[in-house]
Image (cartoon, rainbow, N blue to C red; front, side):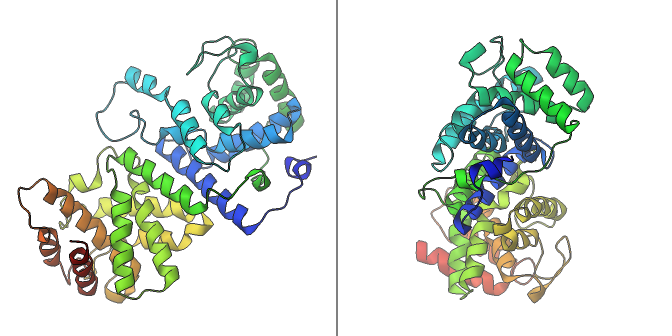
Length: 394
């Protein structure tokens, strides 16, 4: 009997959307930590498979699945990966020990997850003999689902499955509990080491206090923390939606633009420096970097069905109005209007950030600076709407 069969299956459109948002959160977090694409999904499926061999309850299996998908949530903003001082490997390793703890905090903010999800995330790296982290738990003090997640991570992240099998079984009673290693061994022989895909157990998500938009907002907050750009996502979204409304864009386009503005920074997560700090916002130098970051963000967003339209907006945000941008050298109306807006507000925010360091009270100075690029880098109509929104907020 599969996990979905045991739990009754079935899902509402609301739970489907929330499941997509939460798995997207996990995938972006894993990207920030340098994990390969699809790793979180494989770990979650393996953990659920081992859990069935271990005889865990359906509720424990559900919590384990979501903990596996969100296990690296704490990597967003962690000093080992985030912008800032480059740490020596020893210091970076110590910083990574905080990932489970911070991930657990984030899971507690997501009020719809199965109740034990945060605890599993916190104790995913504890070892049976007490040499793990962050709390040096040992033996039966480590929750069984966390023990199984530890094994699943070891297997999926190993370069060679057979070597991983040998390592896990040889470490039974030390790194891994004998019960977890035994359940893994049974799974391995029954499945020949092959991990079958599984559906997200959407029925385990409970309550309505946390919606997909809340997941995207929380993720945007953590992306900003990681990129050392606090508050940028909300500033971009406020300016972008203000311009879109003044230009009478359809409601659906405004919603997609809002998500594009909130999450466009995902493309910079693996960059060691802030994009806006490397090149002037109005400079041609750096166009390729901006386009690469845009494409990275678009690929990430495109994996979430709810963000397909936002993905295409982000992908075109480095195009220039005169056709000299990147990656496709689109010009004028060939650039989606929402992408023209996003490109302008990203540049405006960088200019405004620079403006804050100047000794002047002229709040319109960034507007006058960006206006010099009307007709070349930016759509003049978009810049007029930007000026109106800035004046309205002054």
